Amino acid sequence: MLRFQTAGESHGEALVAFLSGLPAGLPIDFTYVHRELQRRMGGYGRGGRMKIESDSARFLSGVRHGKTIGSPITILIENRDWKNWQLAMAVEPSEEAASKYKPLASPRPGHADLAGCLKYNFPEARYVLERASARETAARVAAGALAKLFLKAFGIELASHTVAVGGAVISPQTITFEQVLSLRDREEIVLNCVDPEAEARMKTEVDGATEARDTVGGVFEVIAHGVPAGLGSCTQWDERLDAALAQGIMSIQAVKAVEIGRGIENAARPGSQVHDEIGYDRVQRRFTRKSNRAGGLEGGITNGEDVIVRGYLKPISTLRQPLESVEFATRQTVRAAYERSDVCVVPAAGVIGEAMVALVLARAFLDKFGGDSMGETRRNFENYLDQMRRF
Image (cartoon, rainbow, N blue to C red; front, side):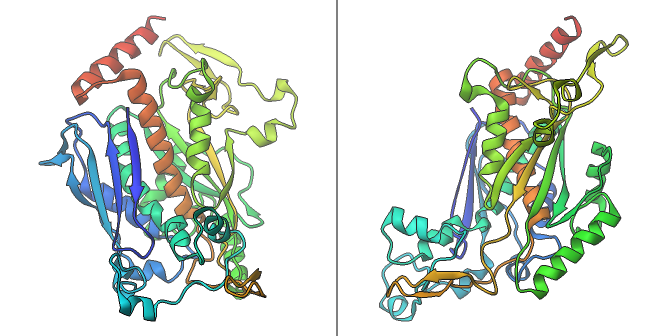
């Protein structure tokens, strides 16, 4: 079974990603992994932290001479900002740290600050916010890059794009996977939108939020191309692949809603305008669809069309003009604490979304085809493709 976990705090010494279950013999493109980490750091509206960090992945285990060896993979990502937080985030007891440490005075509405303090019985929110921070997603992107390399070996590729920023929404149009994939060729990410006119409007939304000392959310879409029919299951609630994808995207910090295909607009339409009609290509010997409103999943199982998932991102909760809160020590009404943050993170969230979709799909792929080595997995996969052609 493919499993992954992360560890580390936002201003701790490092982040760590742990990934187990990848078959032996997968070549690792280290330049690709580095590029994925850099993509997460880009986009219009990012804050000062991205000027400090220069994320790179250091592999500690599970990869030898450029290939996976079947054992757990450990990846270390150093936090360059750690040098400014060594006292505040000291691991061992320190009188100097205790004397110079400034606790977070008041919890931020919309953040994990207060809920986490109540849960863990902390008198202030430093340890909560450090782990709840979206800085943790750098480790997810590193692990997700390996899942993408694995899927790509079987003809499955992923890409993301921005659908909306604030009130600026991309115009209704047919967007191809090739268009979305081509965004990676850009020198500058900007807001990662395939429509230049819509992207200009999105940029205006970010500028407006910056001037108002506010933040802005939006919507990103992840497309997985080349996914075979048959991943996932309809037999148990926790085996449905759409449910696993929804959990993966919802787990991303600031995501408050998830959509598979055109699920939201489909809810307001009659069935005759929702369900994707079925055809058959006798040359390719495969079933086809005239549309893909289902987003590549029916009954919790992939149907051979592109898997399409959207994440709806709330505005970042750290505001330069803080909202009303309560001081931890006195319980008096004050303004919430402020820490350096971003104005807009929608393009970066799309990259994180790609990582989560890749990890979920790779797990479903291995659940179905298994294999301790890439050769074994490939044989199982090719036998399955032959079975579908003979169906």
